[in-house]
Image 1: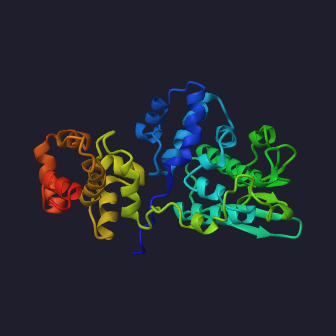
Image 2: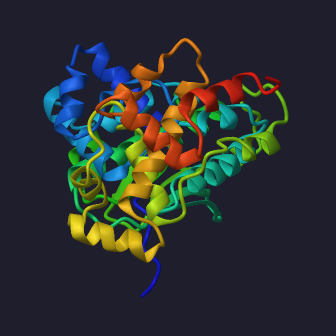
Image 3: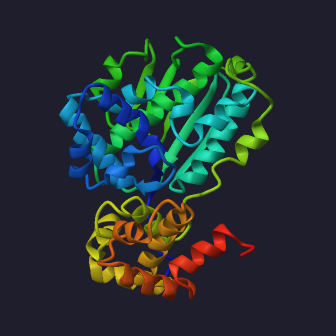
Length: 340
């Protein structure tokens, strides 16, 4: 049997512009996140991963509430490039637009293994394109996600071309939709719908233009940014998706099955095929969470055990002994004072 594909993940940072827009209009973001089965922690600034399907579902729920058919586009167009995702800051520090596009394609594809990006040089102009290998399940949410990516591409080129630039031509994966014909900021762009890729046309002369926000020749550093990559196997991607739920709600087998989209029994079988188990995945999620908390001496062990969902501190201590061979208190003392 072939290797199980990882769960499609997207960094939670990419949801930040949408959350900011919803907050600005007074939307009940907590309730909307709960309807999409996402933890309230997503509202905090962080660099973790969430299941792509859950983020798309949230975008659709939020768009319905706000009555914005172009919510993804508006979210991207009101934000600075640095705020559009984990890739934004290193990309904005590049010297030329060509360097920024190269860094963007590298960083985004590394974070989102189901996406492929590139720059195609054609006679009339260049095409910045993105293709994703994601079976369609939520057309509305996926279209909103595509809007956001389109806005992010346009915003990136505007760092070199100016804040009023619009692409001369656009290719959109989704079927024909009125939002693209009415969207503010697309000007006289000619959209072509229903293609195999999302792409914008970029005039050749812009590629070597210096970015207005560039501070140094930083392309190499941009390629080294975002150290935590999306997991390359199924168990690792499940662990990353579950991490955001730590302390927010019980990490149950049912929650894992909802994220991965099989039955609970199938989920156990998939994990077994990768040489692990549901319990081991949950242990790794909890250990990574408590590892950070234990390094803060101001947080009591009882608070940590309760936050991780244990009935009492004794259960937490037994689990920690199983993970590390020592008690949480001993582990904390050794890490905080190595010379003791």
